[in-house]
Image 1 (spheres, one colour):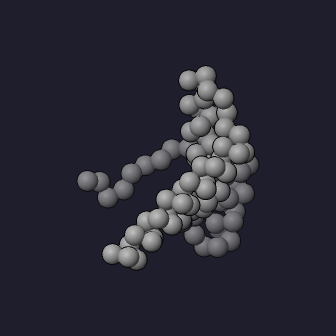
Image 2 (cartoon, helix red, strand yellow):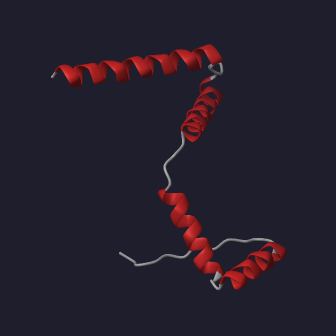
Image 3 (cartoon, helix red, strand yellow):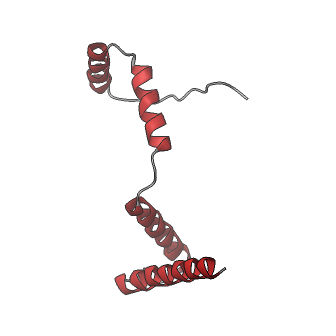
Length: 97
């Protein structure tokens, strides 16, 4: 397995210059700044809002291909309530075991 890999991106020259200037002020390389950002982003916990966005994106792609109606707020609330009930049941079962 390789110790490192390469990512190539295209950015506007003015953006690169602004970032390079900030890096110079901090005494770090642009590569270091980007590696720190990627590491932080990869290791941070996913928020509830991000999980919800992923669920909605999945639902949107499925409704587009299946012709089903988009879920309503009531559908979403019912789904959340059912998940909460399942979790509560699992907690109660583990406590009684």
